[in-house]
Image (tube, rainbow, N blue to C red; front, side, top):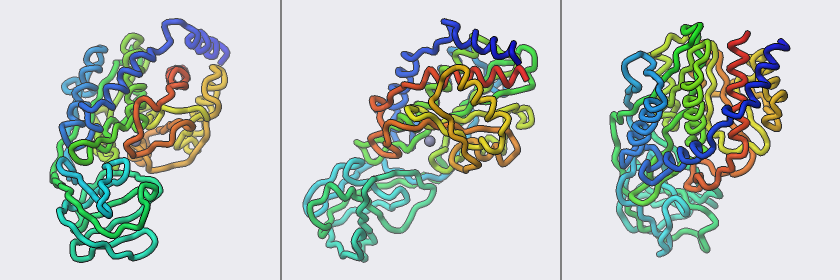
Length: 382
Ligand SMILES: [Zn+2]
């Protein structure tokens, strides 16, 4: 054990080990750029992100999981908003994303009408089937279905008076079979290539709402993809006894669809996965991190804490039980040992237009990188 600890300490203090913060920041900037349009369902955003990730894996020298293709394609229905997105309340024009969002399963509508107050937050245009709801915080999502009515959520603080009249022009396009791809790559193990450590991070986000508004998804989950790519780059240069595999999943925000599809159609047998680490929302960390499934795998959680304490990395790691809140979930259900880690502290933007690259502090990126490399080395030394 002592020998292993010394090895870890040497590894952590090695100058070449320092991860490339420039690269991470550039990657987050790229993934959150207007060009990628929130890595969603309009303006080819998700496809552009997929192309970028595949190019990175290829450039670093990683190989496809099945030896043939970096892509694993699947499809699902999704409701999208590629076009007009105009809302006026009491004659005041509201700004999409900042002042209002459209309910993700809404059908498009173009009309001018009078609203009837139903209660303190809900206002209805019954004939036109439109509901306006006041909220303190706007939180968007992705819908795989379409309703026969339209929901508009308005930020309470932008209104001076209760909603009375509404002018609306919202366009939706329902896509019955949106094509998405998981992007996977690996570095073959030098001693035990059939034992695999898998790191995962979803690259999709919510996409755009109308022609001029997109959700950058910097923390969720450009941060995780950037960290995963840094690790892929590092492991491509430093092959390990076990195979190191990396998958960027699509369709997470639409209901953890990419990882579910993968577990039903695995490219590496699930039984070969010694451990899976899913990272989603890792751009903060002033108050540490939380690990989902910690209570399921106490031995591995103790190991993670040891690496953390020895390396003086994160302020603390909070243990949490099972949760169906990201891409580790279907792996856990199929018996693959897995952790899901997310960081805490700092910004609170979530599923809104304020989750931007410039708000991410990156303060614990270096620590997270060391934590994962240290933990993986311990797993392989057991
Ligand atoms: Zn996420």
